[in-house]
Image 1 (cartoon, each protein chain N blue to C red):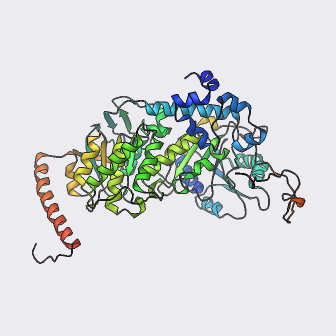
Image 2: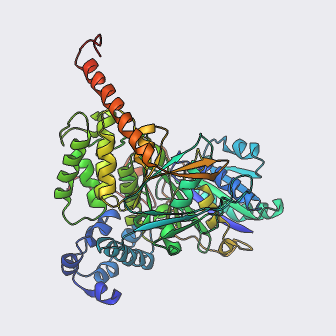
Image 3: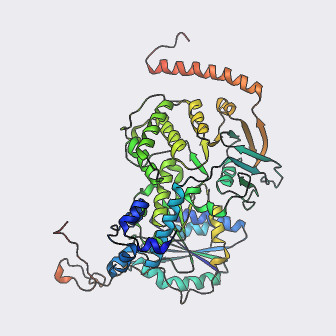
Length: 231
Length: 330
């Protein structure tokens, strides 16, 4: 089975891009499934179901969403195999911009939108920096100059990525994206033993363990302080 | 590019040769190295490495790829002098049976009802189709198959699109806006380019505007004029796709002349008779395929003059309405 990780900031158009890409994959005779990771709530699984796409939903709830992702991705992969799909796509939002679900040797896609502002590429960490493909959405509502500036900023942050423009509403660009999804290189038997491209955000402080009180004396573990006196 | 040499060279020296090298560090939210890049990487603390969000080896690989990409961008790249479209099949599976060579400086109009397949034709050009899209069309650049890697690189993006429902998201003055675009293209003399673009945009716009006007306050005609001048002088894309130019607040003839004068290939999706006749040819799209190619005839060109007279008359009347005149005598 082929596997692709799709990530991107909330509301950047991940679901719309995946829906259109799956349609194109179907035209190529490939059956795709989706595993959707979110935090507290998502309705997107229904959108996939309506299109007859096998979908599995995972909500991280009170846990760090990316730790939840990596703890469940291998099982999701096995689920996909049972569904008999040719290609499984994982969809997850990078909520703190430091998250990244990308796995070595697995096609990594980051979806980011033109409306998010030209400094956004700078603000996103490994999710964008280590992606193989960067999909830029919502190009139809901004000017040509802004599209070019945005794409150039993305290329500066991640010069090795393939940069594509996809319109999630009309589907323009989705066929082209599907050629990358369909590539044989994304074929794999298992995720067990594979490695993330970059470590997850480091944590384990008293607040991770349920502390609510504010103040230095309540803080233990991995704590970092701002330098408020200088600069 | 000698990677070892770049790695060990004092960064200040590298900057003198490649001023854009600093942009890479800035874009990653890092301070520029004080000694060499090698020294910088070797002395990163664990926390800094964590915050970079990327492995050092990958970081260096990105850095070199960036230097190469920008280096090739600032060099004079090969000019596109022609684009050839070879027909494939329409939605019914029938052969389109055509081959069309479009030369730099030509204007081609694309006509056909909504849903007829205009977007797919443009997408084929944008993707530089090699018989691998649903239409099976093929695109050649300068008579040869384009390099496949161009499909994914922003600096080789062949088509600049000037759509009708365009907004500015950035809240900047016209001058600052164009400057950011110029800088993102790493042009040598951004300020000169900016002034040229503002000047040319003003020649196109019905109502003049100042470079200090925020882009969000420009009228429809003015923003259109600014984007056309900007595309003519800053966009690397050799093909410009225009989605209709509304007949208000902009000199359409001058706008097309400006793009064509910069050796662009202009593809215009339009149903306006004047714009259609300004084109050299019209592609008629039906059932997802090119059904007919009409070359603008001498007779049509004659009629264009008449249409332009009518248009001028309407424009005069429009100005009279604007200035508060009555239209009892027309």
